[in-house]
Image (cartoon, rainbow, N blue to C red; front, side, top):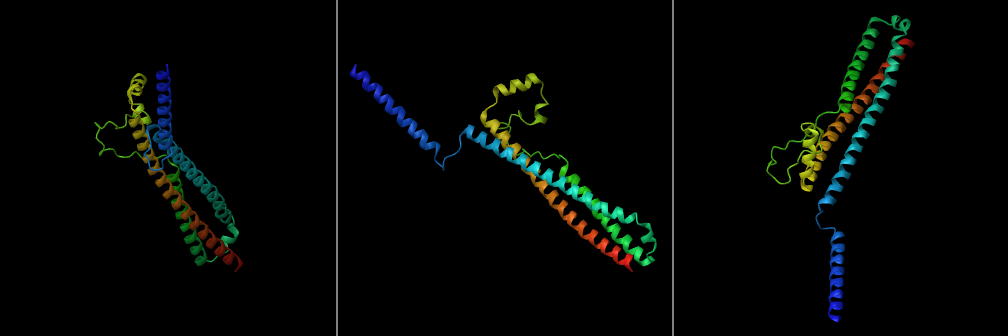
Length: 215
């Protein structure tokens, strides 16, 4: 009986040491992530990437609202036919030149807005990834891979997918989202540059309109 008690205490101490070792390993800042920690980190990174896409879309829509307000002013000027008809030929040429420049900027702005808001295709190339690799993505998350299979084939694939394959596919998706965010941010940046140029051009048109109408 004492021998059995000692064995129980030894087992308890061994288990306690193991738990302490796992606890230290868990809070070791230099260790590598395990599979499930890597999965959660990739999910968090993907959620952040989707949030950035949503922010870019909101910024593009805000720019479109501002553009609509700016365009109301030239339309209002064009309705003042009495003042335009009283201008000299040279003044009309200047006005037409500035309005043409404004129209070109507006076209540029619209094209950049389309570029910023359209979904786009940003799928990373996987040519340098051997398909025989044990962590090669199984194609269970990306919709273009999923629809290639029947529901039964999709379920059968999920039965055999490994955590390393799932994490690899998440990493590929994250890379694609990063490419999409980069393209969107570039388009939104160009969009606001065009919006700023439109505002300056509109200011010049208004100043010229006031000068010509006053004289």
